[in-house]
Amino acid sequence: MDVETANRLMQYRKKAGLSQEELANKLGVSRQAVSKWECAESSPDTDNLIELSKIYGVSIDELINGNPEASKETNNDKEEKKSGIHIKSDKGEVKIDNINIHVKDDDGSEVHISNEGIDIIDNKKSDDVHVEKTFKTHVHFKPRKIDIIYGVISSSIGLIVLVAYLLCGFLIPNGEGWRCYWTLFLLIPVIPSIFKAIQRKKFTRFNYAVAITFVYLTVGMLANVWSPTWILFISIPFYYAIFGKIDYFFYKEDTKKVVIDNNNVIDNEDTKD
Image 1 (cartoon, rainbow, N blue to C red):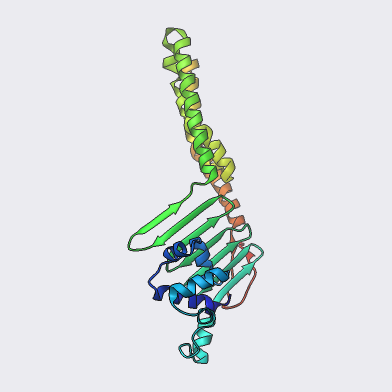
Image 2 (cartoon, rainbow, N blue to C red):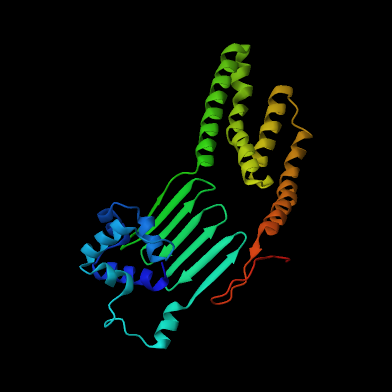
């Protein structure tokens, strides 16, 4: 579908006073499908064209080709209507036509931006987001699988630590279990942060400060050694300073610079600064 037809579909919808969501419900399709029609990314099939013509009260020919008498435009108007930006590289593509923006990544993830709102389809992380533009802003999202896994790990660690602490309290005589092993609760934020650091590929995601606190208190409680183990705390700022630089270095390596030329396509270049 060309851009003119896509814009015509959008104008007919607006004239009918329908949002993309409302039109999608009438047709029995997804809102993303309507958005793609109006972004010239796909075309409605014959059945949907028939239904659209009934909803808008126009013929299919007018819907596709427009009304010849009502669509007289100067050459300048046509050129302005066709103007837009198209960016494409081996990493994906970006299309901007009037107020419709469509971004597609190489993994199939997509972003649609229009006057109706913002749609994000994240195939890589299984995360869909829709920001709806109305009198109030509504954001609908599905939790990512990794966040669900992270939550399960955190809950499981919390339960295991609780059971371990209770066993130590009841089984170790003279109340030593209750007095010394409460430090196990510090492991609740530490262990899941290991998985988060691996998943994000960032050292600073690891909860190093709490891990050092756990080591210091555990050694102090069990061995009654409080000095010079306090020196461990001095390593905390050094850890975040050193590994923060490493994380930033890898972040910069992954950053891409896009050069845009109107109606042309220019490849991406790696940033050097």
